Image 1 (cartoon, helix red, strand yellow):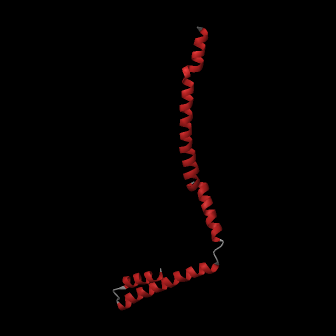
Image 2 (cartoon, rainbow, N blue to C red):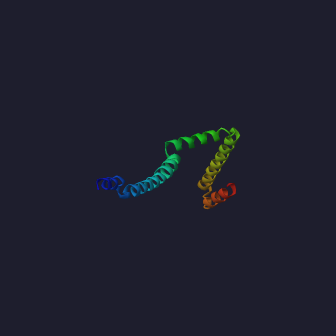
Image 3 (cartoon, helix red, strand yellow):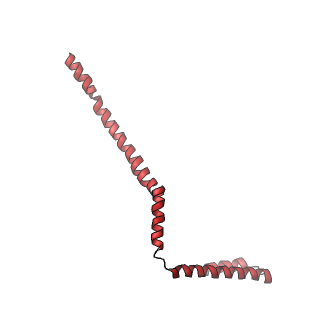
Length: 111
């Protein structure tokens, strides 16, 4: 009788088996949600390390930009600014009513 009671409580009436199965299943689910999706997904891309790596990649890619590319874009920005100032001056002097239409046409032609 003592031996049967000992075996019953030692095995826990197979409660330990089911308890371990449920517990390992829950641990796997929480591992997948917390570690794989949140820590290795969201935090790795948008956390401090992710921001550092993104800025590092931008810096490495910017090395290959030639100075002529930068100068050309600055030139076009300067030309656009001069043109807009000229249109504003025309509007002030000549009272041109269709200035926004002309700016819109210029924007379509350039871009």
